[in-house]
Image (cartoon, rainbow, N blue to C red):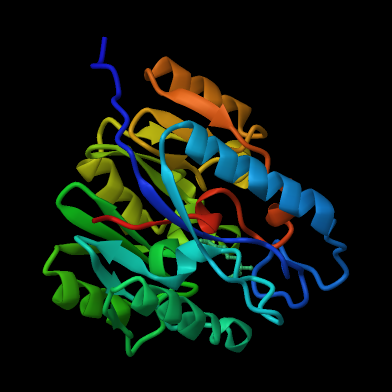
Length: 270
Ligand code: ARG
């Protein structure tokens, strides 16, 4: 029997979906004809925030900006490790102004923020786990940005190539369970990157395509509780079998923009 997973209180940065909408299509989940139910979206988002607080986590909020319908996806704005902030440079022109809006929040909160020179979408593609930072590329964040990340943090940064446009950000295909272990969907990665993950994480939870397509890997774990899409039923069973406590939170309105729980959540690591 594996040891019981233990939770650790986290600090999360989020952005209320006041102006959330699908107005352009920059990933396969988005379609300009989609209607978003904003009342439902706001209610779903509030349920997520309540779930974080109910489990002992601190939640800070960035003021949303009109005209930035994807700003709710806070994960993309930065990576924060040891209180040091590596900001963002978005691939899509529509999202570029978000970097400054988040930078303003970080500065007011007393942080310096490093602006990357290359396209880099924060925790969407950068996932710290144990002694490494896993770094996605293929659709958004570039290899050159991985190099900048490694120089900035001095942490070995392992590039992983994403190959399926449904999983255009690393955080749609992989999440950290806690400690040094992950859950992921191998087919989202190139053969070489799959092999790297297999050898680094022999104990990983391997998810099915159905669970990955249900945004199951866009989850947030505090080490014990896993805030997970309720649609990812197989993954929920796997998590429970491994001793984790699944906390289902439905963000279905955000799936229309290609985002889920993790996309809405940035972790500020002190
Ligand atoms: N519509 C947004 C985009 O395509 C969704 C971002 C989702 N965020 C994430 N961390 N995967 O950029």
